[in-house]
Image (cartoon, rainbow, N blue to C red; front, side, top):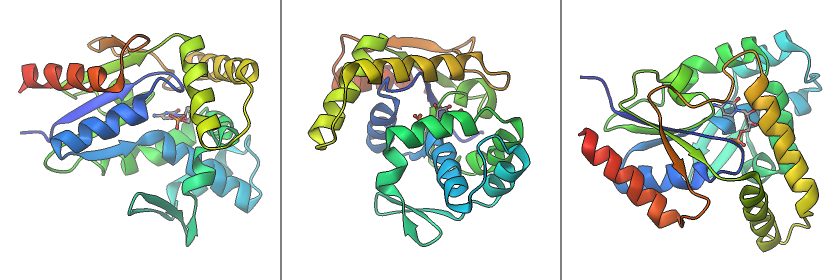
Length: 218
Ligand code: C5P
């Protein structure tokens, strides 16, 4: 019997991360935040002075990321990258890094290694389409771009980070476009994905929806 996986894919700032970590916690499952791997590769490239267009150079970094997750913190080598990892600028760099097939391939096995008992909740762009095509539950999470920009804006302001809603919206649309139009593993719902539009839903309602779907599968 294969180890169960719940995939949660969707665009930038759709709330995948929060939803995935809540669902994982309720079920006592492992969590894979696949975006963090692309973000960490981008930070590693920045540290090493590797250009974001240097596909072989980036793939080498991705293949041996000294990444560790401990006590809700993320370390790259010895460095605590928990905060820089979440910066908008890091997300933008990650979106460029993730265009390269060699980088995606280099991170493939690492992602599979998160599939451990009793189960996994994986969030990203291609969890259901490429990494875990046999997952019994695939959720495609969406919300309007305006909603997502507003949420991101609120989130940044609450952390005391200055943010402009128009430039956030423009940034987000650019990343959506780049992620959906790229040649390799573009962002799109898997054929067997269930769509969840959380524009009008609170986090608890989204969690309950996913848990209900999961109960229906098990
Ligand atoms: O989800 P998050 O914003 O952390 O992802 C950062 C970037 O990493 C995305 O814009 C996307 O380009 C890339 N990514 C990806 N495949 C994934 C997860 C993230 O290409 N599975």
